[in-house]
Length: 382
Image 1 (cartoon, rainbow, N blue to C red):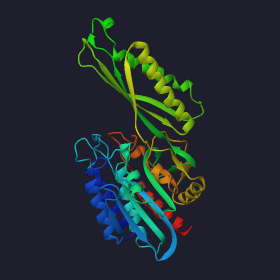
Image 2: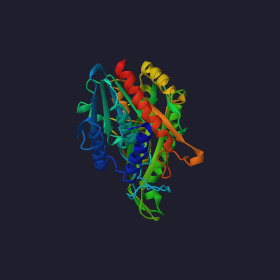
Image 3: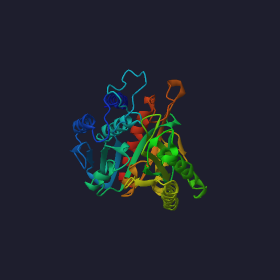
C-alpha cells in the first residue's frame, strides 16, 4: 500500500466514523471497525480490554527492542452537528466535535505503515473509549486490565482547532490541567414570590456563593495557571414561586497540588459560610478521582520535538487548561502528548473543538500518521 493509498484509506475511515459517531462507553461500531482493520493488517488484536469497546493491537518485531504504546480515543460528544459536510453525522444530537474520529483514523494509518516495516520490540496500539467522560474515563480501566504492562514509552496526538493546520504543539512538563468538577446543592425554604421575607431563597444564596467563589483568585498565586467556572444553575418552576432548592455545577482547573488544595478548601468555606449566614443548608459534592495533570516527560519530549520537526513545524505552547485522561498513561511510563493543528481559514476550519461547526483540514491527517509511525520506530530502537 503506497502512502497515497494510506492517505485515501485514512480519510475514508475518518469519514465513516464521523458519519456514525458514538458516545462514551457505547463505541461498538467504531470498535468493530478498528478490530477489523487491525486484523486485516495481520496485527494481533484483543477486544474488550478493561471496557467492552476498548481495542488493543500488538505488532511484535523479530528483533529485540523497547515497547512503545500509541493511543487514540474514539468517543463522540452529545452535540448536534451544524456543518454542511457531505459526511456529517447521521446520528441526531451526536457529533465528533473534538476530532476523535481523526485520532482513530491516524492511528490506523500508522498501523498500515508499521505493519509493513521490520519493527523492533513491540508497538502497542491503544484504542480508548470514553475520554470525554471526565470521571472514570477509558484510560483507567484499560490500565487496570494491563495495557501498560511492559510499556517503555507512550505517545498520543490530539487534533486542535487552536493551532494552524499542520503545526505540532506541545511542551515539556505539566501540559494539561487536572479537572475538579463540583456540584453544590442548596436547600432553602420556598414560598410566594411576593413574600421573600418568609422564605430562605436558594437562588439568592446561589448568587452570593458565585460572587464569593470568584474571589478565590485573591487566594491563589497569580503566576499559577488557574480556572474556576460555575457552568450551570438549576432552580425554580414558576415566576411567582420561590423554590426550596437550587443546584449549581462547575469546574476548577489547576496544574499544581498547592493551588488545587487552596481552591478546594476555599470553595467549601465559601459554601459553608454563605449558607449559614442566610439560613440555608448546603452540600458540596466533588467528582472522585478526576483526571490527573497531564505531565510530559521533559527528556522524551525534547526528542519528540526534534523528530516532529522533520515532519512539520513544531512549537512549544503554554499550558492548556483543558484536561485529558492520557495523563493516566503518562503516570505509568515516559511519554509525550501533543496537538496537531487543523485551523485553516481558506477551508472554513475556524471553529474550536467542541463546537457544533467544528471541522478538520484533512490534509493534516497524514502528518499525524507519520508522527505516530516515526515515534514508534525511533523509540522502539532507543
